[in-house]
Image (cartoon, rainbow, N blue to C red; front, top):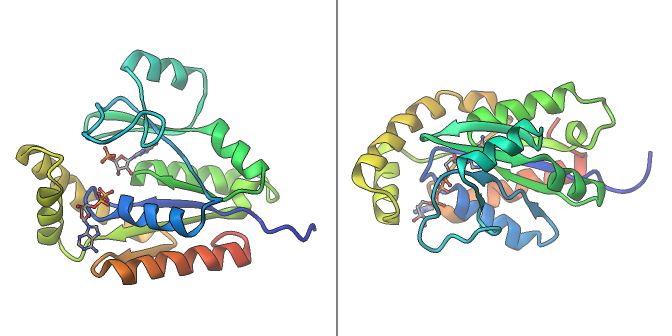
Length: 204
Ligand code: ADP
Ligand code: 5GP
């Protein structure tokens, strides 16, 4: 066994509005060498989002072409749009010994978790895998945050809340759960989960 630390594959899921983007940004600022897995999506960019930084914004045909070509580690339909995690950048980062952060939904997390479990014992995905579900303090607070964020129309907020209930039912599948009530505390918990995984090599 080499003395090099095993890179962490940190998968983070949460209902929309729970504060996952905020927490991911903080962790990336804490650990600048960590590679953020930029997903592909067919959803249109929100104001302020940039292609190649927040997402790769693809039209449905290009998304399908990449899917058929096997470029995605996982892909899923979320809120009526397709999202997918590119395999190659994650594998390249791990090969360089860099940690990878994936902000994906519960379906995607289940698929990456299954892939990690099915991989050979010495595979970086299997060795470094850890997943976290971020919960909002309550559904009312989630509605407030989505409304305050101001990026979604009221009917979209309601759709997201319906979906949030279903996603929160699956929180038990994750290795860790964090309630994002006070941001500082949630951030400290996420940081501690990462540090532990980094020391141990993965979450198991
Ligand atoms: P997600 O990526 O899960 O959809 P965001 O990170 O965009 O969520 O957060 C949704 C909104 O809630 C943002 O306006 C963000 O600033 C705010 N927010 C995040 N965490 C907290 C918190 N602990 N307390 C209050 N507001 C928060
Ligand atoms: P948003 O449109 O608000 O950025 O993201 C909506 C949901 O899609 C979030 O739960 C986010 O984690 C998820 N998501 C983003 N990228 C991916 C991806 O590559 N795969 C999957 N399965 N979900 C993703």
